[in-house]
Length: 471
Image 1 (tube, rainbow, N blue to C red):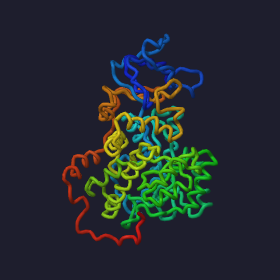
Image 2: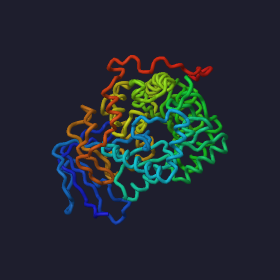
Image 3: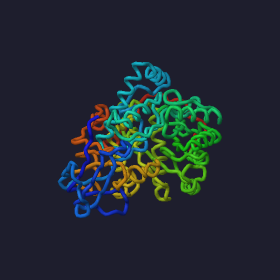
Image 4: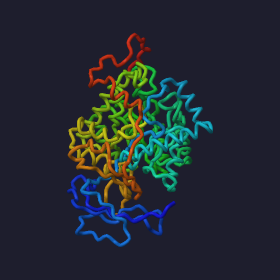
């Protein structure tokens, strides 16, 4: 590895990530890269107005010419195995075939290549931390180690590896350790920890992308006893638990079981909001919501010829969309801690479009751009338990930030093209992303906002609805 230089970023305007902080104008950011303890390299040494910072000799000076600097985005819900490209994996048999192929030597090499490319795409889009919430064969974990060891310049990765699901449950045929009792749930958690997981992901209800009957998305799959066992075992090891949830009943059981984050969500009532805010069984004493609005809007705004969803999956998506948006609004109004994650890697949701989730926060949550940025940086870091390391531009924190041409609190679209990205003190000048052709084709094709009416193929017979679908 080449010797890294100490850096001084000058002539910039700093948004440090605190919700109430004023912009530090004409600022200097010192980054210490040359230290005896390699683990402390890439830390911010000082950040203040130029009159309050003296640049030590030997520092490389980078003139940012009046640009704006803000903390790197944190994506709290992603799947690094996917790029956002729609794939023909909408049937159990197709998913099993893909999982089997990825388990081969050739498949492993291809999967690791995909994950590296998707991590690079996220980083070049200004995402300096990614929580990847389920990848087959735990392949995200060796890539995390490559980043940690300095063999790859990439975003900070928090990896769940394989998720935990019940037989026939969401992700069971592709991503999961299968557990059908409390003790099997504990065993699965132990396997994930042995793999090197940073946190545990469970699927406690059915999902949209692998649903086969209308109403299946949100159906309770793991029992409360299984959820509780998984949470207890993870918490004994100091690991947080994230749970995929698509129904109000599922939210209740997930919270009672002690999950630390509810992913996606569903309609909330006052009792659930109180339990989010004061959850004695969670690791931190509260639970957070990560609503992932982008993915559900993407798959319901586009014709199934773009998403490759079945008619059943499309209809389930339209049902879940309202639940997720309502959960976000009610949670925000009730003071629930809300994280930002766009479900990157899933159909039509690429790793370089995390900034669009902030647009949804502004639209559906009546937020200011500054508030949305806070949720995607400092608030996310707090939810993930890494706020002592990243999420703000402060002395002692990791040098993880993006440089933008103008003030992003005035225009969030500036986040779509950062002029520079810094991660762990590494500088990426003129970052570029590799766009996903199929995503671009969908964005230029028919969509709800462009007058698309028939988004699901006509003339298709639907399978029978589930009895008493969970609301």
